[in-house]
Length: 232
Picture 1: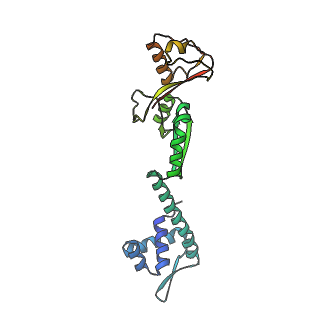
Picture 2 (picture 1 turned 120 degrees about the vertical axis):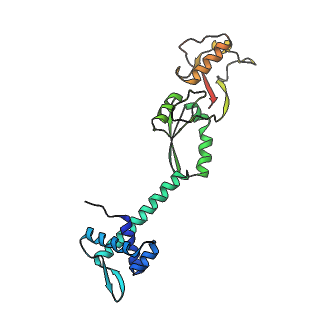
Picture 3 (picture 1 turned 90 degrees about the horizontal axis):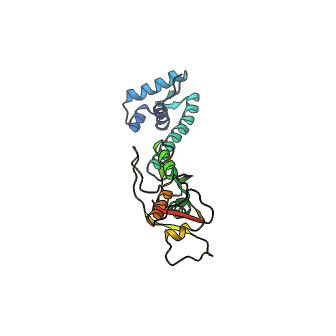
């Protein structure tokens, strides 16, 4: 079954508003024969007259009045849908899917999201806690819109990776530890540690820092210290 065209409904509503085929044609910037064709197609689709001509004035029939009323709502909904989509395309509202690691979510995102909420309250951010590799993979397959990853990362086809900020790698230690004035890889390796997943960029950066100081980390770690990267 053929659907009713919004253009045909717009023509019918214009005739109802102006009371004339000629005035409707001028308002819609259409040729008068085109307006007549639109109404003929609508009446053929409905199977009943939609307009009546009395004393030189064109008015909707009883059935036409019902279709005009429904048509106004449909046209308004279509215009609102287009406006909503255009606002999303312009970045003024809508939903964005963001992937980031726990470090970025805990340290960087709260402040950024608060600023975004104040400036663009109609934008909804959905956050997924992921490793950098998982974030890149989901960006590539289209299930994320933006991601925060630890740099550097190898190029990924179809993705643009841009540096955002650079922060030092930090070690968080218990307050009761007696830390030296300068924490060295040798001293820190002697403490009970917690490190990120060995597959992450942070883990590799941490291992490289220890290795540069002449210390090779064992594969397993126990509790107390967390190493976090701040380079994105």
